Length: 172
Image (cartoon, rainbow, N blue to C red; front, side, top):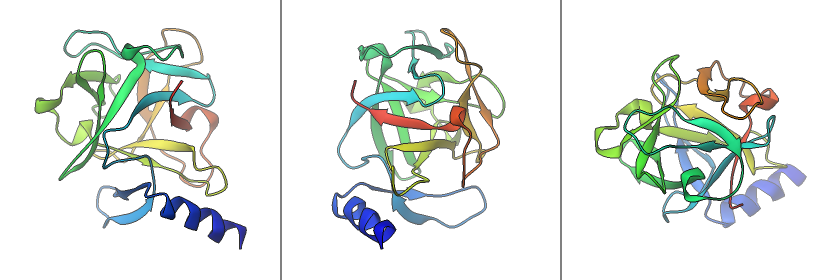
Protein backbone atom coordinates (compact mmCIF):
# COMPACT_ATOMS: atom_id res chain seq x y z
CA UNK A 1 0.00 0.00 0.00
CA UNK A 2 2.91 2.38 0.78
CA UNK A 3 4.39 1.73 -2.67
CA UNK A 4 1.06 2.47 -4.31
CA UNK A 5 0.65 5.73 -2.35
CA UNK A 6 4.19 6.84 -3.23
CA UNK A 7 3.62 6.03 -6.91
CA UNK A 8 0.27 7.85 -6.93
CA UNK A 9 1.90 10.91 -5.33
CA UNK A 10 4.56 10.94 -8.06
CA UNK A 11 1.98 10.47 -10.80
CA UNK A 12 -0.21 13.24 -9.37
CA UNK A 13 2.75 15.61 -9.41
CA UNK A 14 2.92 15.33 -13.21
CA UNK A 15 6.50 14.07 -13.11
CA UNK A 16 6.43 11.54 -15.94
CA UNK A 17 8.45 10.64 -18.99
CA UNK A 18 8.68 7.83 -21.50
CA UNK A 19 11.05 4.99 -20.69
CA UNK A 20 12.39 2.98 -23.57
CA UNK A 21 15.26 0.58 -23.95
CA UNK A 22 16.77 -0.52 -27.25
CA UNK A 23 14.58 -3.27 -28.69
CA UNK A 24 11.67 -2.75 -26.29
CA UNK A 25 8.42 -0.81 -26.31
CA UNK A 26 7.96 2.38 -24.29
CA UNK A 27 6.24 2.45 -20.89
CA UNK A 28 5.37 5.47 -18.70
CA UNK A 29 7.23 5.60 -15.37
CA UNK A 30 7.96 8.31 -12.75
CA UNK A 31 10.84 10.50 -13.94
CA UNK A 32 12.42 13.94 -13.93
CA UNK A 33 10.32 16.83 -15.26
CA UNK A 34 10.11 16.80 -19.03
CA UNK A 35 7.46 19.21 -20.29
CA UNK A 36 8.71 22.36 -18.62
CA UNK A 37 12.31 23.18 -19.31
CA UNK A 38 13.51 22.23 -15.86
CA UNK A 39 17.13 22.75 -14.96
CA UNK A 40 19.33 21.26 -12.28
CA UNK A 41 22.54 19.50 -11.42
CA UNK A 42 23.24 15.80 -11.88
CA UNK A 43 24.73 14.67 -8.58
CA UNK A 44 26.24 11.21 -8.23
CA UNK A 45 25.27 9.26 -5.11
CA UNK A 46 28.65 7.56 -4.65
CA UNK A 47 30.97 10.54 -5.11
CA UNK A 48 28.47 13.26 -4.10
CA UNK A 49 29.91 15.26 -7.04
CA UNK A 50 28.27 16.81 -10.11
CA UNK A 51 28.78 16.72 -13.88
CA UNK A 52 30.74 19.77 -15.09
CA UNK A 53 30.93 20.89 -18.74
CA UNK A 54 33.50 23.13 -20.40
CA UNK A 55 32.79 25.38 -23.37
CA UNK A 56 34.31 23.58 -26.34
CA UNK A 57 32.66 21.24 -28.81
CA UNK A 58 33.22 17.55 -27.99
CA UNK A 59 35.00 18.41 -24.71
CA UNK A 60 34.96 15.70 -22.07
CA UNK A 61 32.68 16.16 -19.07
CA UNK A 62 34.32 15.90 -15.66
CA UNK A 63 33.28 15.39 -12.07
CA UNK A 64 33.39 18.46 -9.82
CA UNK A 65 32.27 19.59 -6.37
CA UNK A 66 28.61 20.57 -6.67
CA UNK A 67 28.32 24.35 -6.54
CA UNK A 68 25.25 25.11 -8.66
CA UNK A 69 27.15 27.18 -11.25
CA UNK A 70 25.84 27.25 -14.82
CA UNK A 71 28.62 24.94 -16.06
CA UNK A 72 27.08 22.28 -13.79
CA UNK A 73 23.41 23.02 -14.57
CA UNK A 74 21.57 21.00 -17.20
CA UNK A 75 18.31 21.93 -18.92
CA UNK A 76 15.83 19.16 -19.77
CA UNK A 77 14.52 19.14 -23.36
CA UNK A 78 12.06 16.70 -24.88
CA UNK A 79 11.72 15.96 -28.58
CA UNK A 80 10.12 13.12 -30.53
CA UNK A 81 13.05 10.83 -29.64
CA UNK A 82 13.17 11.42 -25.89
CA UNK A 83 15.10 13.62 -23.48
CA UNK A 84 18.29 15.56 -23.99
CA UNK A 85 20.13 17.61 -21.39
CA UNK A 86 21.88 20.80 -22.47
CA UNK A 87 24.42 22.57 -20.32
CA UNK A 88 23.23 25.98 -19.20
CA UNK A 89 26.68 27.52 -19.73
CA UNK A 90 27.74 26.00 -23.06
CA UNK A 91 24.28 25.27 -24.50
CA UNK A 92 25.59 21.89 -25.68
CA UNK A 93 24.07 18.47 -24.99
CA UNK A 94 25.27 15.59 -22.81
CA UNK A 95 26.51 12.82 -25.12
CA UNK A 96 28.03 9.39 -24.61
CA UNK A 97 28.93 7.12 -27.51
CA UNK A 98 29.21 3.42 -26.75
CA UNK A 99 32.04 2.96 -24.23
CA UNK A 100 33.73 6.33 -24.88
CA UNK A 101 33.99 9.11 -22.32
CA UNK A 102 30.91 11.33 -21.99
CA UNK A 103 31.19 14.62 -23.87
CA UNK A 104 29.10 17.56 -24.94
CA UNK A 105 28.03 18.25 -28.51
CA UNK A 106 25.91 20.95 -30.17
CA UNK A 107 22.34 19.81 -29.55
CA UNK A 108 21.38 20.14 -33.24
CA UNK A 109 23.94 17.43 -34.04
CA UNK A 110 22.74 15.11 -31.29
CA UNK A 111 21.48 11.67 -32.23
CA UNK A 112 20.31 8.76 -30.02
CA UNK A 113 23.60 8.83 -28.12
CA UNK A 114 22.54 12.22 -26.71
CA UNK A 115 19.09 10.99 -25.63
CA UNK A 116 18.70 9.77 -22.07
CA UNK A 117 16.20 8.22 -19.72
CA UNK A 118 16.28 9.01 -16.00
CA UNK A 119 14.80 5.88 -14.43
CA UNK A 120 13.69 6.23 -10.79
CA UNK A 121 14.16 2.63 -9.68
CA UNK A 122 12.97 3.11 -6.07
CA UNK A 123 9.40 4.38 -5.56
CA UNK A 124 10.22 5.06 -1.89
CA UNK A 125 13.00 7.48 -2.84
CA UNK A 126 12.30 8.58 -6.44
CA UNK A 127 14.83 11.44 -6.39
CA UNK A 128 17.60 8.89 -7.10
CA UNK A 129 17.69 7.12 -10.43
CA UNK A 130 19.93 5.84 -13.17
CA UNK A 131 20.83 7.75 -16.35
CA UNK A 132 20.32 5.38 -19.28
CA UNK A 133 21.68 6.16 -22.74
CA UNK A 134 18.94 5.42 -25.29
CA UNK A 135 21.36 4.34 -28.01
CA UNK A 136 23.07 1.66 -25.92
CA UNK A 137 20.83 0.95 -22.92
CA UNK A 138 23.89 1.48 -20.69
CA UNK A 139 24.18 3.72 -17.62
CA UNK A 140 26.35 6.79 -17.09
CA UNK A 141 28.96 6.33 -14.32
CA UNK A 142 31.98 8.32 -13.12
CA UNK A 143 35.41 6.69 -13.35
CA UNK A 144 36.08 7.06 -9.63
CA UNK A 145 35.13 9.45 -6.86
CA UNK A 146 37.88 12.04 -7.36
CA UNK A 147 37.64 15.56 -8.79
CA UNK A 148 38.14 15.60 -12.54
CA UNK A 149 37.05 11.98 -13.02
CA UNK A 150 35.60 11.33 -16.46
CA UNK A 151 32.24 9.65 -17.15
CA UNK A 152 31.66 6.49 -19.18
CA UNK A 153 28.85 4.01 -19.78
CA UNK A 154 28.50 0.73 -17.96
CA UNK A 155 25.94 -2.09 -17.97
CA UNK A 156 22.91 -0.99 -15.93
CA UNK A 157 21.59 -2.77 -12.89
CA UNK A 158 17.91 -1.78 -12.95
CA UNK A 159 16.80 -3.40 -9.68
CA UNK A 160 19.61 -2.51 -7.29
CA UNK A 161 22.12 -0.22 -9.01
CA UNK A 162 25.55 0.20 -7.43
CA UNK A 163 26.16 3.59 -5.80
CA UNK A 164 28.17 4.92 -8.77
CA UNK A 165 25.17 4.38 -11.13
CA UNK A 166 22.82 6.42 -8.93
CA UNK A 167 22.08 10.04 -9.80
CA UNK A 168 19.70 12.74 -8.74
CA UNK A 169 18.59 15.75 -10.73
CA UNK A 170 18.59 18.49 -8.14
CA UNK A 171 18.79 22.23 -7.63
CA UNK A 172 21.86 22.99 -5.53
